[in-house]
Length: 83
Image 1 (tube, rainbow, N blue to C red):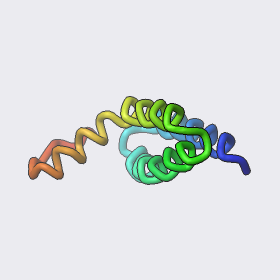
Image 2 (cartoon, helix red, strand yellow):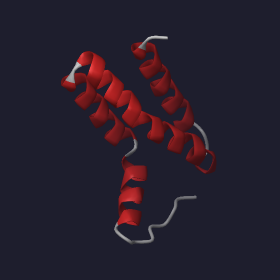
Image 3 (tube, rainbow, N blue to C red):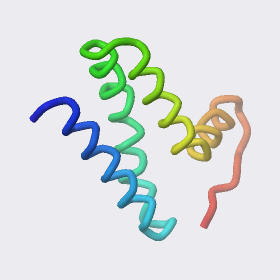
């Protein structure tokens, strides 16, 4: 399976997870968030910095609320989890 196909499958999986109810999004969303840096690194290695940077921007846009939550947790705050 090529890297482009893997990236497309990641995007489709992200769209499918987004359609789930909020309480069912946590586990698959964390898995997608954990796989994203590896995929970004592989794209950067094979296609260059610009595609990897664009993918990183898309990741931050797509996962802005979970990333904000984890950043607050790292700073010692106790942010509220949406229900």
